[in-house]
Image: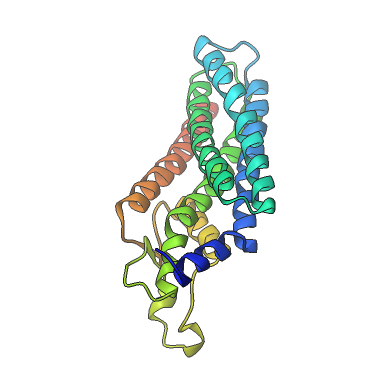
Length: 231
């Protein structure tokens, strides 16, 4: 890709929506740190599995936050190469931290000495972290293709939004914004699957399956714990 198309891609990198995406990664990192803190209060006599989980999280969480801050700095400096490197690094670390927190919740579920209040708070943090991370995930894989399509390139996107088939002329040159990806991520976690936007490519389909699996695991865990408390 060269010429006007390449220029459009570069310009979109520095648009406010990209800043919002980086900020969302920062929110995910802060939620991860908060989850680690609440999980540490959940169990005062942790098992070996919980200790291992905390050890992994103690490294992944601060590094993800530091990487997010570096991505934010390089985004403000408009350093394309460094920004992309730290952005992708942060995404990888955020996914590791998210899965690590999920494992930590599952381990705590089998500990009879845990605190139900802190366990519920931890689950809420992981649920919000799940939404934040996959907002970034969908944007990262779909948004560049949407920009290329808007520039006239004959390709199909990762995600088809319902606005494409709208009869309204005001939506003729529509392309998804940050809020559209946040809405998609929230709905996917809340309804356990896609609603109106349709995933067309394998990357997003796998991402949606993973997001739904995490959301369902949290719900099942809380339901199982609630039943245990009742009995």
